[in-house]
Image (cartoon, rainbow, N blue to C red):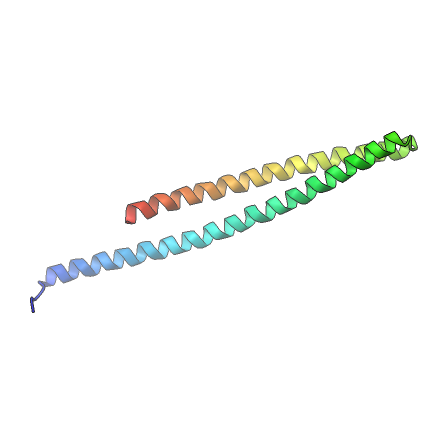
Amino acid sequence: MVKTPKTEVGKAKEDLTETIENLTDDAEKLKADAEKAKVVEEKNAALDKQKETLEKAKVALETAKTNKADQDVIDKLQDAVTKLEGSVASAKASVDEAQAKFDEVNESLQERKQSIY
């Protein structure tokens, strides 16, 4: 059996400690990444619901116009459509922002992973 000099054992121990620290950091970043992915998913679901509601409101507005409904009803439906369009635009911006943060974290994690392996 060959004896390893103390300096090599010490170096191996330092390397192992560094690898463990890097893996721990990666695990923490993966957890944060998963949380950001969940936020993106939740925001996308909310956006989809708002889009669906907007489409229903547009159909109701068109139906009211086609059936020559009372002008007050048409005006209120138009107001609802306008507000929903604003909400959808705001939700879309929120989704885009969350996606950008997710992509940034993911890219950083991939770079770090490549530097370790």
